[in-house]
Length: 200
Image (cartoon, rainbow, N blue to C red; front, side, top):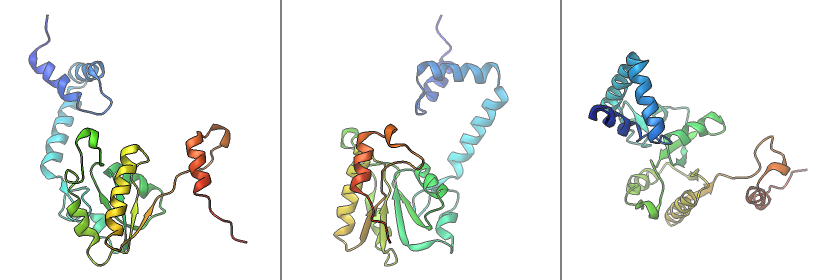
């Protein structure tokens, strides 16, 4: 006996979440319907409200309820530094380091030709307008160290250098507290290439 179409629609809808396959989506759907209907309603309400009030910040492109997000409005940030990240989650991770006090631009993706995502899909003209404001002096590329992230960083680097901007890339290497014995050879090789001299 087939499941009701409304239930199938719910299962299909839950599959849009990353890492959720058919069985996980089905378990979630049955859990919400059998054991947590108030939770299901909260989820519905939260999604509806979020979709209605959230928009992209006009300056950094992250999600916000205002035209300009709170971080971009802050007088405590260094406006001459602009860190480019792939997603809002990446920006949050950068913030958690407490090692960066500049501003951000969130690409909301990365260049990935195999997925049909090129510079046009990322609306890089907005980023170009942002770095061309006369205030930004250095662009820090903090895209992920995946093939797509590297392609994105290379493309952006060439684009910014041609406009006379200083461009840097976050370093990669051995993690803090990591033991060499457990570090993969690619990471270790990169750490050697990006080694720093020690001052006397």
